[in-house]
Length: 441
Picture: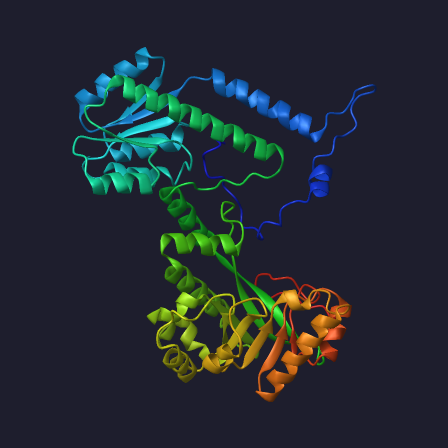
């Protein structure tokens, strides 16, 4: 697989947190060799592997793809580059170019912008579906500010105007080949260290990565339990994807925000969560996270949306990590959601913006305490005082308290003593496909 080509992956759990130094050392620890042989260290093996790759990269032919609907121009450039030692492939339209990109690992691509059916900007976006890192040089005989901005936004390495001087084109291609091969060496080093993830570096690449993320998106369900009754109270729906370039929910949300597609992502998550949850009758509640911008989405407030059809069993979690100040008509939006049957939870309490004003605005039925308040609460007097005050306040307001991130029996016992109503965490179950089995330690 080439370093710039998106890897094929099976559906998987989110990537584990980055290795610690000790974990990394153990994961690549040297094995015993033949008698008298001194094992290589992980660093030495990595350096040797990268050096071998570097030798291969330097010595292999430089492969370039030229794309232009003007055949005379195409042939002239092809002759010039072949004379300079390049291996040249040609295509006279975008469709042909995409087919070649699927089959060949090019070091650089040079494409005209103004072509029928598929212009150079569209071609660049198509290329990023198959190769995130190959440098693309766009050329045009009719330069405009708009096309220049688009070319740079979608990740063109350079934007040249026709007629392109041979020297200028050669300089661009030499630079492109060096960039491509350096990216390959970085990827090879990451693979040898077990840290390989392929990141999109431009808008076109990010769009391609995000589309793959949506295609592989699935919903994990994490139980919320009543520890006193040893019963499952509900499930939180959590975003998961098999796309390695966006390995955790935070990365997916950041990509959606950069691309202006938070509303699309939110709708997909809500629709899939509700469809899986209502597939069979359930007594438990479904907790669904909302990004603040979701509150502005008419689809959320529509009585005909899939989530609204199950509103009586749904709790909408609104995070305290984001400000609600820019949400216009917040009270009326919350009132509409309640009329549909939804209940409201304030999520991540203790981690973000809000104070008691959030409670006044949202009037939640549930509060979820951030795990930063929960971790090690059995030994922290300060955390115990904070949580006791919060549970007391919530009880007076008729709000039920959920403690997130419970991992030990000592934390569980402390939270029960502090009057937390519901608990959630790996102590009881890990998030999984519908529906994880709960253990009662």
